[in-house]
Amino acid sequence: MQRVGLLLRVKPEKLEEYKREHTQVWPELQAELKAAGFRNYSLWLSPEGLEFGYLECDDWDAACAYLAKSEIHDRWQEYMSNFLDSPQNADQGGQPVQLLKQVFLLE
Image 1: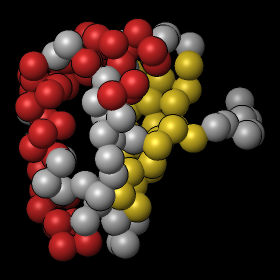
Image 2: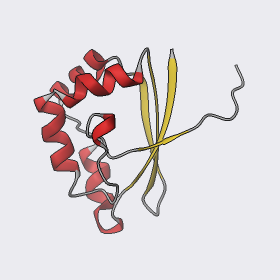
Image 3: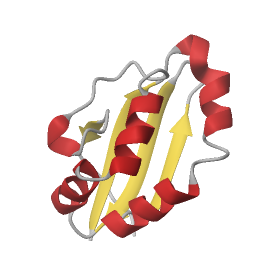
């Protein structure tokens, strides 16, 4: 299992709308994320718009490759591009994320 930590930046003027959109994430997108292998996926947002995400998956590269071929994921990323100040990364399935390196784990 891989643990993945990532950062995004939300445009300050879009914070409230962004939070509203994440209370109603498309069910078909949620199904696609699960099909890609994402588990235990959560997002944490600061008042300034810095967002931390955490998820678990068996193979990050395979999950990204799956999402890179997903029409639903493409539509969501295009829609979210209006909210984010983070460039999309083609190597990560078009997701606008900066991956973090884990430096400590207490189990």
